[in-house]
Amino acid sequence: GGVQNNVIPSEFVISIDCRIAITVDLEEFEKTLNKWCEEAGEGVWVEYESKQPRIPVTKLDETNLFWMAFKKAFDDMNLQLTPYIFSAGTDIRFLRALGISGLGFQPVNHTPILAHAHNEYLNKEVFLRGIDIYYKIIPAIANVEETSIQKS
Image (cartoon, rainbow, N blue to C red; front, side):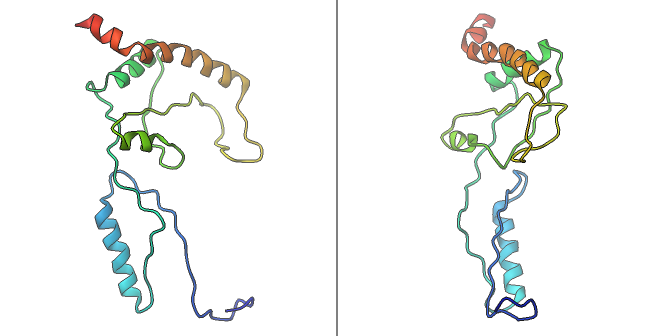
């Protein structure tokens, strides 16, 4: 190639970071990528820098006592809880790979999404409310065994 935009390079490389949803079949996704390369013609292929195995997600049902305690703390505070999977920036997957369930939580609402922005901030009231929420959640999940024994 060269520095001019009208020069066709002898080769080019594209890097793609895919965060695959838990509902996507990894084998089928890989087959699709390989098929696209094959259809593109000779000299087109995929190389994987990193492939993560499918790790089961944390169960959010009555079999997970920590989830039940977490949810009850929210119910007791009359707060709405909307579970979702944050695929980009959590290390919980490494714990789940070891068979350890994990929940991620950040009490950030009524705040613009500014993650990694130059002006990233958290409103003082949101921050202080978050402390109050943690004040209720931490004892609830820290005492799961004690709570479950008392109910037996």
